[in-house]
Length: 450
Ligand SMILES: [Zn+2]
Image (cartoon, rainbow, N blue to C red; front, side, top):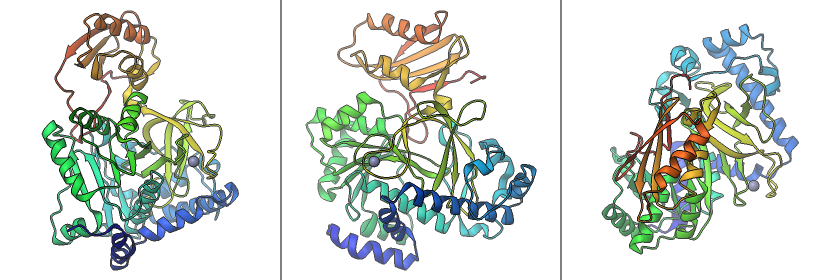
């Protein structure tokens, strides 16, 4: 039996929050109310949140007390990033070695939720968050989902690796009554699995389609081939690797714009496009974002920098000046939608997705893919693996338009970018294997110094 969407939105969702004593929908309303406030109002609000978080971290976490003491941080009710630039960056190694000394003594460990770990490095990282922080994160994600054209109460369809199976009775009820989501498992995408997904789609009629960008692209190409029409009201691509060629195909096939979103497992939502699609609005109500050059100074708009995040809403395990391992570029102007938050022009990749040129410079894997995969017909899918500075392997899935002359063209494209002495080998595959998380990686750098 299909429950009408308005019943889910107006009765089930609010009841579930009331039953769970959750701040999730209250956060959605607060963010909706505040989203067109002035730049000054937003600044004051987040500076107060930063002051409060730093005081809490200092008073309840031995790790942060030592760190702030060593950096001579002076606490105040209202603080900005300029007040904490002497605080060292929090690296993933720091998080690993600090262990539970980063947790706030205000909470028992069973009151905290452990974030999913792993990420692109494949090395486990334990990040904990208090219940209110989790609810605020979920609220921010729903608020951003609404920018895509999806409405609260509409079912969802996810293109995801290893979809979760509800195990408890409460979770099964929750899936049927409230979450109402169907999955296409990215570990097993085939014509048959897509056909089954489309059958489930026609029963549930999802509003939102979300997943890793490249997986949504693959779904789009298969349904186009099979002549299946799926009509979501919003599409959210959660992976930063939304390349223009794939974006165009997704938008043609589903006939609506794609909303690009950027987040990470440690702090959840970092930035998301609004309905104008002119850059990604930074989630400034919940985070401070810094972009740093290699010398540690802040980037100007237009400059590519390392993404460093301070999350204002996690009191269980404060994450202050956390180096995410990603690179991004800030946009000079604000969005013409009227929201006061700054925009990311683009997220250029994980630092691990950059290849190393012979002269030591870093080359964004995604740009290389755009110069090859996007430019020449004949390549269905591609992955670049740099084994040594002068050793590169291109893994290619050919399409019907493949011509053998293309292999020499590709070799010269990669030699131009990485140095003429680079030895490029090409291997051909039926499919490109996915990461254990179900994500695709376009470029893999195995060079030690990277
Ligand atoms: Zn906007």
